[in-house]
Image 1 (tube, rainbow, N blue to C red):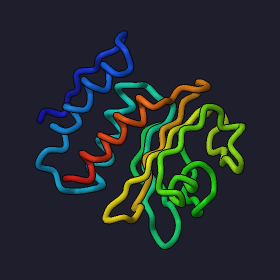
Image 2 (tube, rainbow, N blue to C red):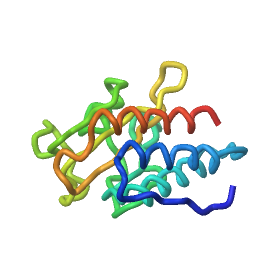
Image 3 (cartoon, one colour):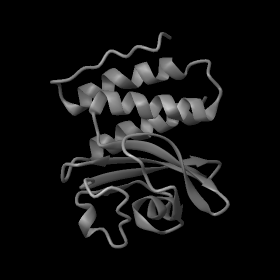
Length: 159
């Protein structure tokens, strides 16, 4: 696929996901390099939704280590169970945080971040990383984001 995306705005969140997901699938088609695919997914999601921060942390030696991302500089390493990313890793489940200030142990990598969704990347029952998305708007993420971002993760993990 050409490296151009057709960005749809001024439509519902669901319609935006329905537009970008097939494009992400096509963008990753035939590419087997995991890091390259993570980089393109982060860029595509950032471009479509203009979220504050979109990126991946990968499990390395009992820590989450910063991977491909789009947005301002970020925390480099996160311990298991620490912050939203570490909690998602530990629990092996998606966590939606309407207000990061109310999340116990939240790690403030960027003070502008107000809400967050973190989804685990699970291979053969083991979390290998997380997709972390931050917004500067309170209560930005919901079950719609969870459903569609899980589809994006499925595309990534099936390449």
